[in-house]
Image (tube, rainbow, N blue to C red; front, side):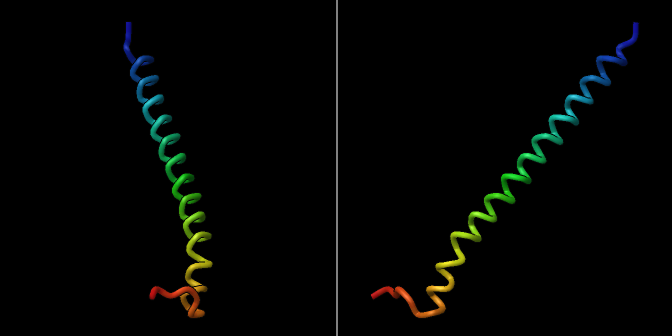
Length: 55
């Protein structure tokens, strides 16, 4: 009896999970950067135009 099927399945599941987690992290990072850019855009325009300034 060989252990090859178990070893292949274990490696396959490990690689598959690593790919899923890596892809998920990359997508979440992309969305977070887009949200941050959308939040920062108006504040940068205000500061350049001499908008709200601290007393």
